[in-house]
Image 1 (spheres, rainbow, N blue to C red):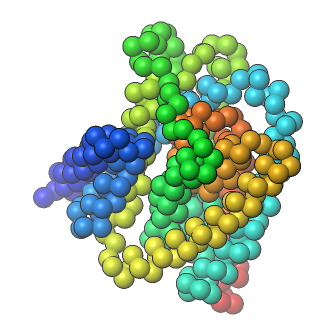
Image 2 (cartoon, rainbow, N blue to C red):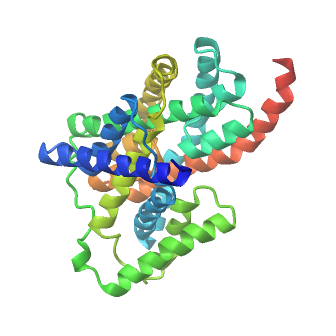
Image 3 (cartoon, rainbow, N blue to C red):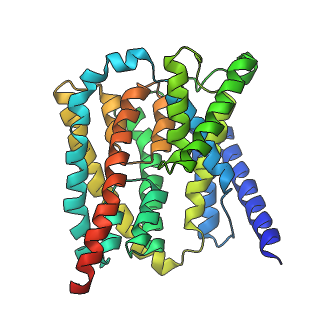
Length: 350
């Protein structure tokens, strides 16, 4: 079987499994069927030994939909509220610093990770970013991928439960208007913003270009009164579907021994992050720096795309949540090359 035909078959299997999972979640009225359905179905299929493969550029492109959704929420009113967010955002560097101070020795001494793998496993950055930077610094790509996939999988699974049962949030806030209700001109402008922002961001080397590029372009269009709506509901659902499948397929090829060690390491660190997140969320709420649901989502150490989806379905202040996640990601990413250089210089003494 040629590589290309094998890839097609693997992606077809992934699509079938994802659709089946979505259908089961939808029929049983389980939460976020287009996100959790494919995610759980692909996870179970991967652990059973099925050969699955993500959808490549299509999945990356799906994130541009969320970038447009975020950008469309950036309005003059958001900037008017920026001073009110300053105190909460100022806590983000402290949160990241504690992740490093606690997480690096945790992964090194408890789980036996080498120094670069321990550092990039501890950082609450994006999965792809941490794997790329960590590998370049000499870390173990497979371990990093599984630790971060486990983190995101668990956070995305448990966060809705906490939102509903602890914070009393609903998960039924409209994702957006149906596509049939959209002006054609608005759809075309949003599509162009997604493509230009994504590809333009890649061309200039913007990290997280698939989300941040469209977000920046759409924010400009929103602030200049060119667009007035978020992407249609169908587009948001498609993004959820592809993101969910993308998380699940990261567990393909894992053997039982690897599952026990690396996933256990990831889960135990999630517990550490949960405590830190709870403390910082409480500080934000206690000092009146933000509302409870927004504070929870702002410091929940999940992926930016996944937290965007949860912010939308709970009807939260999307600008508040994303401002914190962008600050976290910018700090983690910009610090990564510096840390990598320090690790490389220190490695001969290990």
